[in-house]
Length: 327
Image (cartoon, rainbow, N blue to C red; front, side, top):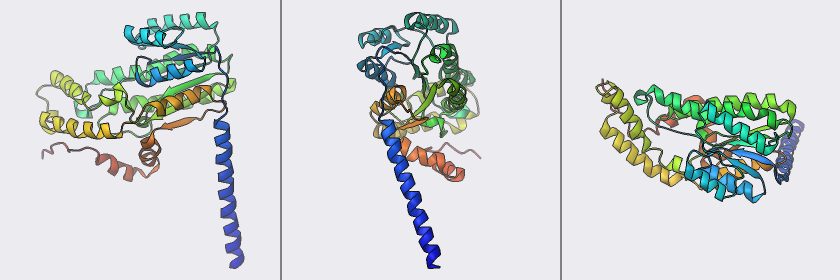
């Protein structure tokens, strides 16, 4: 019996030691950075927030950045921050994207180190008051635009053995109530990234996914207020619908008030996500996945890994106040 206990104890310590050494080696590898002087990188969604932060960080490392923006003001700001080119376009516009790709090919000589997909859109709302046009719009911006641009840039990424970095969300690994269109688009882009990672590995092009939790960005901080917009869109389309029995205007006002206050308390500095995107672009050994922010590494990681019954119960508890139950 003593011999069995001794062997078991030794094995446990050996496993612990191997894990410790593995973590140490991983930490050392993660610190190794590449020199990307004058290498070309495309960053989308550079008008503000994470995209603008990534632009500034890459420019500081002498990377030649092509910044996609949605507004003229965003384009002017990107150029001011050091972008070599700042096409202003709607990334769902196929013709505009095709023209931008031609510009990229011309200015980069057909050799691109990376693309960081950061542009995104969200319109939260519970499924019963989400119009179908919202699903289409969110999917076009958060998924189809990523797939289209990536496909067009692949021939320029192969010669450099470069990078594709996709900013997903914690909603891409854990779907939450009240945000189905956005969550569906992020689950789609996660699947796309998984397939892309394997396919591009034959050319040593690496694919990383960044999953930020709530950051203090314009997109995130206005999240709950946008429920009003979704509710109004459905009211315009179906003013006398039964959906209003459960999701009343009074319920909505209270829901937004309570949760906006909670959101302000958990939102973190976007530098967490910015640093992870920059690492994925510049590190010699980028990770497959980056969980950005405290809640991404704790609560959302737990929800992702725990039994579905437990996750269901936790997520149901986030709907406060509950809708009006009509029997």
